[in-house]
Image 1 (cartoon, rainbow, N blue to C red):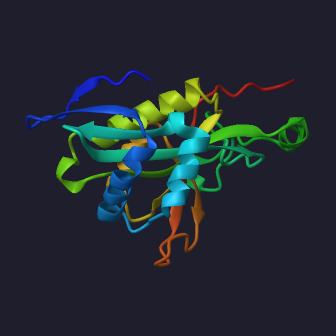
Image 2 (image 1 turned 45 degrees about the vertical axis):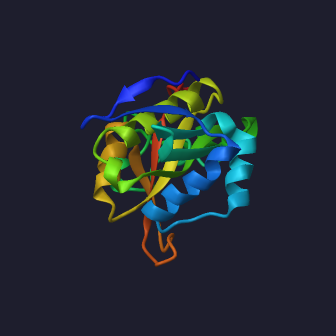
Length: 203
């Protein structure tokens, strides 16, 4: 990807680019300062080595101010593929139609689907509300679609994190599942999915 300078308002600019192993210490600092969910150094290296095109950082004047870390998975779970929902407010396919048993069986035996998984996204507090998180998410979705050819992108978010939920909804993510006690402190998580490919009914 080509790193282009972006205007973040209030007199600062930044670029979004692929992460390198040299960035990981700063990425960990952003993570520790921003989120209660933390990871080992070796986990960041693993994600970077496996799905490096989808591990992005936002950099301003040589400082990492945010990041988004993604991986690619194969799944038979139609909820994660964006074909079904377990929640009443977002049931079924794009038009609200739930995939039928025959379609589900056909998918089960015709192979799995490839999905992108947003593992973690964070921006330092002093750089929030300036479009950095949205720019990271937009670029990540573009990379996951063009480079990894995923059918959908999904993520987990705390049910109490309304600002993040609103941002994800602006990108077309929909709440499709609740995972009870997902976080270490016992809070539940919403699973939110953005379907990238059109749903084609097979007759």
